[in-house]
Amino acid sequence: AFSRDGRWMATGAWDNGVKLWDAATGSEVRSFTGHTGRVHAVVFNEDATLLASASGTPDSRYVSNGAADNSIRVWEVATGKQLQRLVGHTGEARAVVWSKDGKSLFSAGDDGLIHLWDVATGAERPSLGRVLEGLRYARGRPELLGTYGVDMVAMFFGFGVMISVGALTID
Image 1 (cartoon, helix red, strand yellow):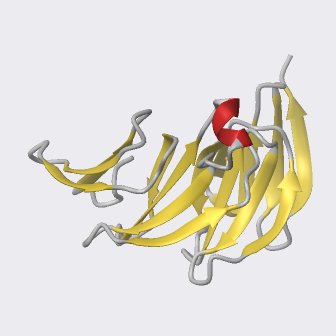
Image 2 (tube, rainbow, N blue to C red):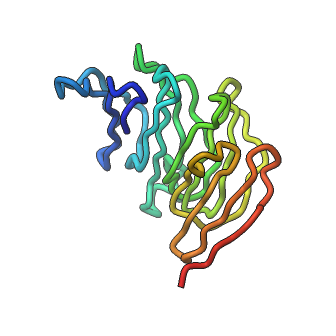
């Protein structure tokens, strides 16, 4: 993921790592440590002061002993400090996007749910059910959040009320 101003690039990897890079020089700036599962997604907030990452542990032996990571983490970019660990997915967390106001995060995972999180408190708001692979805002429609999944169905949700406003099946 690139910051909006193009200054930073963040990466997540299957070695559980999240790294911040200087986009101009390609130099590593810092590592963010804490995930114990592979990192599937990273995303900056609007002003690149915060970074969110989505992680998951697919191996059932970790799930059975309570060590699965399936979490969203929020990091302070300037210091690398973890500000929140958001836990609620029962499968790998695979996608994460910031709300347009920067106060909330949406996450999606193998549990088939869209989770909505309050970034300041870490509180989870009501979740939406849907098997999906990713989340995207509709271009030119910041109030419309779209999801898509391996079932070849795209769903659209109105952000203000978080109700399904439409679906599209791809044949």
